[in-house]
Length: 287
Image (tube, rainbow, N blue to C red; front, side, top):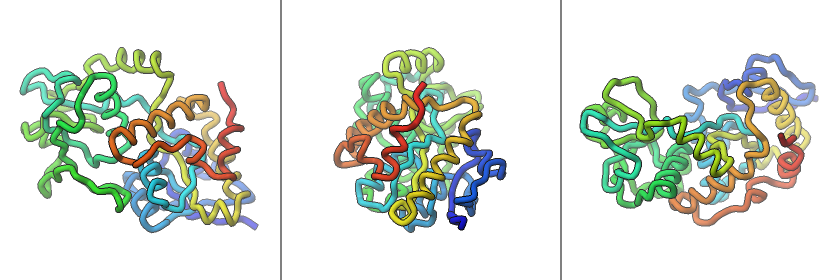
């Protein structure tokens, strides 16, 4: 008998074959919910357990786990990227370097985004930025309702990039733009990314996949099948995420989240999984 699963997955190179039905299973089938962008479905999953299987920002998962939300991590990475190209400033008001952000007004969609956590970690640990000195301006609340957000909320109706263009913000994190006045905070992006990878051998994880704790306890075979299908869908995707990076990337984002007070303590990587999903991480082929 096929188990039908309420599922939230964005269409990515490593999920497209599941979304379009090219890859199917006799054990499970997917009832896909559509949110645009996909991250709008993370709040219903965290707050209401809306799905059996869900794409999930890794920072949201860490925060959700820290307050006991009944979700379990799968070792499948669906979005990962270098973050240096997602920080902008307005060059019309002069040159701004990463180390110049102390005391500045910096906008970000939500303080708890994965890209934001990665970039703040880079700014603090590589460029000596005092994150507490920054006047953070946000536009959305956290997916995890229990999080106490102390940032300044942008006025209703304001757009993050327009505020940067208008000089109401000094920089923004987590955004890209072709506006002629908006420049990369890390101007030699490729050099920064190569240097970062040479130092840490980490490709930052943005989104992984979680399952409900109830599904993992009730039907571990379905959970293992979801993992297998995700692996199969990712097999021919370009670029392929290096599995041997997963533990390093998770350890680093855990440390960054503790440093930024997004979670109260550092989990071990093994704590993020349960007895069903932990062995799946260990069996992932390494390159």
